[in-house]
Image (cartoon, rainbow, N blue to C red; front, top):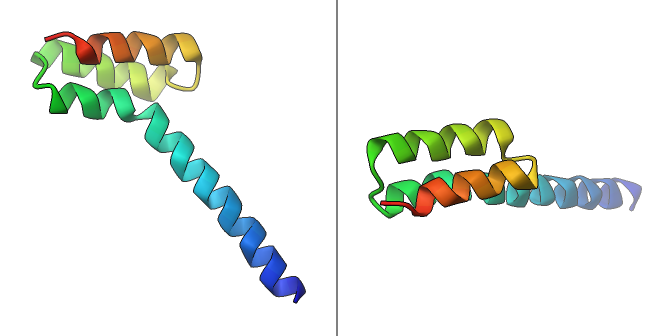
Amino acid sequence: MILTNDILYLLKYILVVCIFVCIVLAPAYLACANDASKDNRMRARVGSWLFGWSFVGWIFALFFSAKK
């Protein structure tokens, strides 16, 4: 019983980390999906990877991913 609870506890944190990573990297995906210019895709990727953990950096990356 304890082993099952530990596994569920671990799976919960793995799921939360995966969701967080998907949200942080969403601007890089949107830049490719929107067929943005090469410079804007690069800015979105770098901004998302380096500054995606902060809300300001994520908004910056999202801004450049939406530009064509």
